[in-house]
Image 1: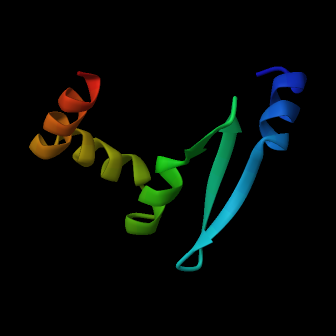
Image 2: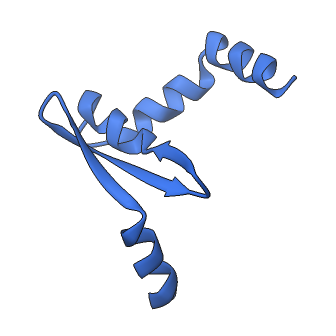
Length: 70
């Protein structure tokens, strides 16, 4: 990532404190995006990607995403 994109990203990012955990929120074109990795870090600080993988492979999640795509 070049320096200009990095500065834009930093400028559009804020921090939310939830249960003593910092969650990044990025604003892109008037839409807020919450960091799923930061949320997953609450459950597993050492390997948040494991939490996300399990969530994405969950049947209910797959069903929800399918409905959302419709």
